[in-house]
Image (cartoon, rainbow, N blue to C red):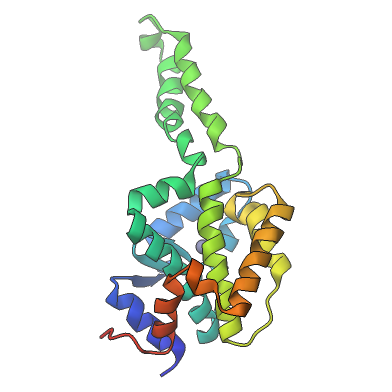
Length: 231
Ligand SMILES: [Zn+2]
C-alpha cells in the first residue's frame, strides 16, 4: 500500500475527514471574504492551498499527486496533533493572534453606521466615543504572529522531513517566503530569523535528531510505513 493510503487511514482513525475546497460552503465563504484582505488571493486560497479547521482537511482544488498529498497531509496532521494536544480554542487563538483581537470591531462596524445614519436614533443622544470601539481594528494589520510562526515552523519542519523521506530536493527560499510574505499574512517580519530557524530544522531532519524535538515524527513515520493499527 502507498504511504499516502496509509496516512489517510491513520488520519481517519484520528477522526480527520477530508473534503475538496470547491465542495465546502465554509471555504467558499472564506474565499469570498478574502477579497477584503490583502496578501492571499481567493483563487490561490481555493486552488493552491490545502487548509485545515478543527478535524477537517480541505484539499486544494488543483490536481495533487499522491506524493504531494502525502507531504501535505503529514504537515496538516502536525497542526491537528498540536491542536488536539493544546485544545482547539487555545491553538486557534495563538494561531490567529494578534489579528483575532480585531474581532470585537466587527459588530461595531455593522451597528455604528446604522445607528449614526438613522434619523430616528439621531434624536436619541449619541455618544461619539463609541467610535473608539473601532480601535480594535488596529489589530487587523499584518503584525507578526509568534504563535502562527511557531505552529508553521513545526508544520514546515515536518514538510522537510517528508521531502527527505521521498528523496526530493527542497526549495528553501519558497518556504521562507511563506513565513515572510502574504500567504500567511506576513506572520514573520524577519527573513534572517526564519532562515536561521529553518536551517536548524534542516540539520535536525538530516541528522535524524528531529524526533527528539518533535516526537510526533515517530508516530508519523509509523503511519507512513503502515505500522499503526489504524483500521
Ligand atoms: Zn501549516
